[in-house]
Each structure stands twice: as structure tokens, then as C-alpha cells.
Length: 309
Image (tube, rainbow, N blue to C red):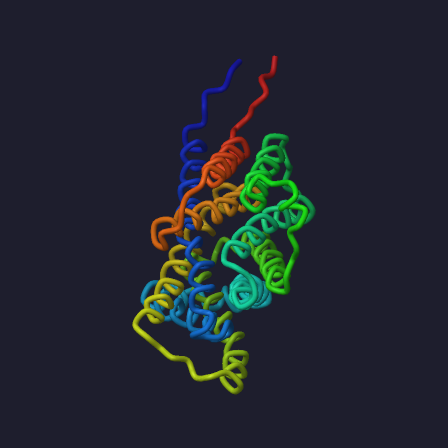
């Protein structure tokens, strides 16, 4: 006897996809900003102001909930410490350090290609998530699309690609973000999404404080401009509060292994943003790469069910 489609499950899947798309669209600007402001502000200072801004924004949104849930939060401080360490203190700070040594396109490409692979492997090992054939195929197709963009469809150029110290930093950031994605799946259900974000933003900011102070002792004073403050606001509100809320909810609806695949869209979106905002040219290889990544995501998120007799 055939089963009727589960409409609520179908809606949940599409909600998760929509939330993941919002998050990666906003996140795509993170790589461009980190590269653009690297001469104005140090990486630890940028990370500190970003998460400090995000924490302040979260106070009116999560203050009452946080106070109501403080006893529950205290019971999970060890877990919250590692979530904050990997997702807040390490991940984006490593991206900002990488911005001093490598290009924005390298940061987006290397970070978004490697993080889904790390997260998928971890989800299989630690969360016992299954890896259906369509998800594996989709992940491979996404990687092919990114490699097309890296190589400009040239095999010799791909073979000549070399990692710089900045690329190593972005790989470390990708690993940290993969660990974060796995840890988020273990979020205690009795801690609300707003309280969760507020406490990890706050803890991450505190972790970064000594590094910010140390950086200010040997670097030139920060030259704050209106543009720099707008960049910090974009990072604090957009890439922190809005994106993390959407991303964490997407993980809850889709699972860690499926959600992280959407990170492959970041270099594609970054390229589009470069065309729109920086006047860079869109080439045929950009279009082909984008279509390939989108095809991989479509295949990875297909719901394949085998009929039973």
C-alpha cells in the first residue's frame, strides 16, 4: 500500500533550504570585506568588533530569554565553550588572518570546498548520519564545480595551484567550522535559539578580548572611518546574527551533512557580488561553475524513496 507524501516533512525541507540560502548569501560578503579592510584593521580586532557588535545587537532580542534559561545554560557551559571556540573565536578569525595573506577568491574557494567534506566525514563518524548515494554524488559534483572555477577549466592551471600560508589558515578555519556544524546538532533542546546565539557570541567575544589587546600593542592604531563602521555593522548584524540564526535553524531541519553542502554556493555568490559591486566581468566559466554547483546541490537534496512491494 503506497504512503501519502508527508506534506509537513516536505515543507520542513524547503524551509531548511531557504534558510541555508539566506545564510550563505549574506556570508559571501564576509570574504570580500575581510580582504578589503586588511590594511585598516587587524584580524583579531576585526573579529572582536564583529562579535562584540553581534552580542550588543542580541541583548534586546535574547536578554529576557537568557535570564530565564541561565540555570540551564550553566549546566551546559562546557559544551557552549567548545561551540563558541570553534564557531566564533576560531573560524572567522582564521578567515580574517587568511585575508592578510591570500586572495578573497582563494578564501571562498578553499574554505567552502573543504568544510563540507570535513563536516560530512565528522557527521558520519560522530553523529552516525548516513551518506546516501545522491548526497555523495551531489557533494562530488559541487567540488567539481568549484575546481572548474579554481582552474578556469585548465588542467595545467589546476596542477600548478599551490597553497600559501593564507590558504593553510583558511583550511584551519574550515575545519573549525566543520566541528561547529557537528556540535550545533547536539544543541540542548531546552536552550532557545536566541539564548544559544547570545551566549556563544558573548563567550566568543570574551575569548577574543586578550588577542585584541595583544594585537593593539604592536599594530598601528585602527583608523575608524564611516565605511569601516558600516563593514563592522554588516559583519555583526548580517553575517553574525541573521546568518547564524538561519544557518542553525537550517541544520535543525536538514541535518549537518546536507546543510554544509550549501556552503559551496559561497564562491559562486561571491563572484556575483564582485560583478555587481566591484564591476568585475562574468565569464563563461563562472556561469558553468555556478550551474554545476547548483546541480550538485539539487541532487544532494533530492528525496529518493525506494518502493516496497
